[in-house]
Length: 64
Image (cartoon, rainbow, N blue to C red):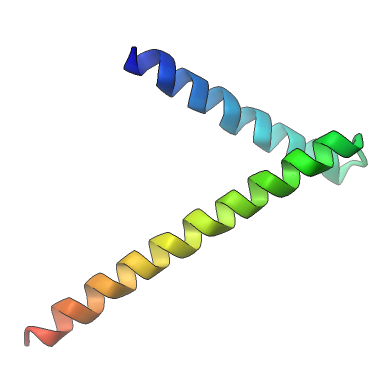
């Protein structure tokens, strides 16, 4: 069951990346919408990872 879920996530990721490329080349409106959603989700994940890492660094520095 987990393998099916991971394959579904992989298909969504590949589809989102394909829409980003297609939208850059002037694809249809729905591809541009999917590309915007994909890029926004990517930016949110990236910023949450930075916040998590910076929180770990500040707490580890406080122990010294």
